[in-house]
Image 1 (cartoon, helix red, strand yellow):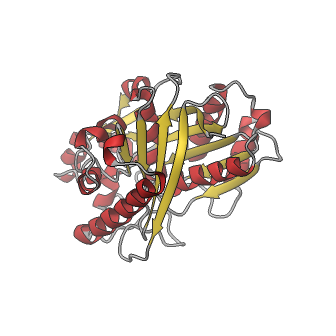
Image 2 (cartoon, helix red, strand yellow):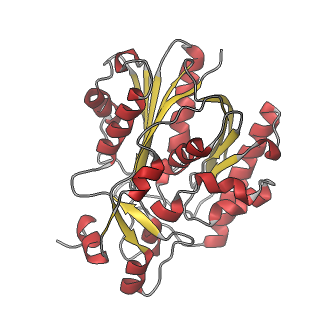
Amino acid sequence: MAIGISGYSVYVPRLRIKKEDYAKAWGSFQAPGVSEKSVMSFDEDVLTAAAKVSRTALASVPIGQEKVTRFALASTSAPYLEKMLSGMVVVNVGMPSSTFCSDHTSSTRAGTEAMISAFEHLKAVPSGLAVVAAADAPKASMWDSTEHALGAGAAGFALSSDDLIAEFEGSASFAMEHFGERFRPSNEDMIIDLGVKKFSQKAFVSATTKACSSLMKKIGSKPEDYAHVVIQQPDAKTPASVAGKMAFDATKLESGMISTSLGDLGAASTPVGLVSALEAAKVGERIMVVSYGSGAASDALSFKVVSEKKTKPSLKEQLEKKEYIDYIQYLKLKGALK
């Protein structure tokens, strides 16, 4: 029995800041290819965003939330270090208390990790309904150039064996030890990056290409079989390095390229990119999704679009609905100015 995506949703915060405002303050903007990024307001965080996309994803399928059997939440910037975060979203949205919940929080790979865990549930319970929410707003020191790229956003998916939009064809993963990249110590709420670009780039390319090639070998596909390719986006330039190594035409990245106008969405990067690709995809086209988390690990997932159904409001509509803030307002929102 085929399983896959039956419904999806996306949330983009209304507030944005342009790269020019960073340049005015710092003299430069260290986020290649990013023209502006999304910013959460005072009254929202990753949990409110996760609840919003979960509710909207469920509203897009003909099955009520009372039928949900599995919920997975992904984020690297949740407000609690020890607390059942997914349970809070389950109650807020009205999913059953018997829903098996899980939190995926320690890596920007968490979004695909949550999706794979939900698909594993559906393989065991074909009649089940799984919901995945990836919501993130990663933080770094305002004095660190790593902070320049960090944005905010969320994506939600209703996964089942009924009324599919995109069939899940399979997944593959790769993990290795690679010290020196982006990390967050247990006593810190901000990420740290040692800034050794070539060292980090090597790990990124190595992990993602190995996961991707392993998946294609596993399901018998080839790079030319894919019309859309979504790769983790710490900025808007890095994905091209992987696409080139895997013989994917660079044009296949365009439909899922969300970092140019939203920035680095952390664990929500590939899920939001997947939504963008789904909105552009036609029936019969295939989508490759490749995530990355420093440390290092990668997941690759393959989907085949089987329906023309689209979810509203679209990502495009939300991208156009925005309000710009300046750098001083941004500092206040981030708590750097009181």
